Every structure is written in structure tokens, then in C-alpha cells.
Image 1 (tube, one colour):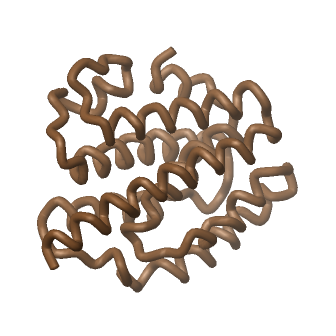
Image 2 (cartoon, one colour):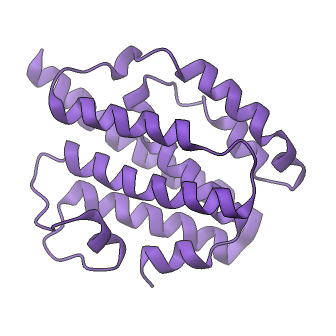
Length: 192
């Protein structure tokens, strides 16, 4: 099943986890620490967390909003990647409703794939990330392929296991964050 189809079939919790996982993997670009999104992840575990989503989101925005920190790079690829990550955070809906979360999850999916495409040292032969999301994967660069796999895995975990899929989804996201942090670090060392 393609990523687009998985997003189309996901429930509200799966969509929220999908969007949050994409943002989580891109946190190195915003200078955030590995724990900054933990309150949002914790809120996905039960239905009571939906009511606290907005307050927790505003706390995260407060921590990440005005500081580029380690994510302040020179070079057009990094600048665009940082901008895309900031837009993911800004677009997160304050109310965790299925309709708003679906749009956000889709937006985050596209943005995360674009970020990985921008930062991948190898060229992605595809015309667009939309083709990748629809299942056309020929000539995909390694970093983009790994991000696509992670997005699909997160949605499959939540669809197959419900709230019990959150912990493994977070582990998938953590792995992706480490990979992106290493890519960003390597690029910074080459320039510095």
C-alpha cells in the first residue's frame, strides 16, 4: 500500500503520530533536543491527551519558535530544510481533530521527504516526492528511501496495534532523528 493510501485510511491517532514522527525526525534542524516533543507523544497514548494537545503544542512552539540554535546553517539546501521544518511546526493544528490532523500529517509527510531530499548527498532521480508517496520508488536516493520507509512503518504500526504501536513508532522516529542529525553534522563539518 502506498504512503498516500495509508494516510487516507489512518485514524486520528495514527495521523497525529505520523505528523509528529515526521516533525520529530527533523528536530535537529530546529536545534531542539531529543526530548522536546515527548509531551506530545505522551498525549497520544490515551484519549484524554487530545484535550491537552493544544497546550502541549504551544509549549513546544515556545521552546523551538524563536531559536535556530544548532539548526542555523548557511547554504541554500539547509536554509530551505530549516524553513520546511519550521513550517511543519507552525502548521500543527491546536485542536487534535481528525480533519485538521489529516491535513497536517499529509503536509508533514511531504515536507519531511523534501527535507531528506535536500540533505541527501546522493541525487534522487525522481521528479517529485509526490511520486515517491504514491509508490514510484525507482532511482530513489538512500536518505529519501529510508524516510519513506519510516513514514510507512509508523502508519502501519498505529493501524495494526493502535496505542500499543506508539512506542515502536517513537523508536522508528528516534532512529530517523539520529540519521538526520548525523547528516546535518557531517555537512556542517565539511563547511566548517
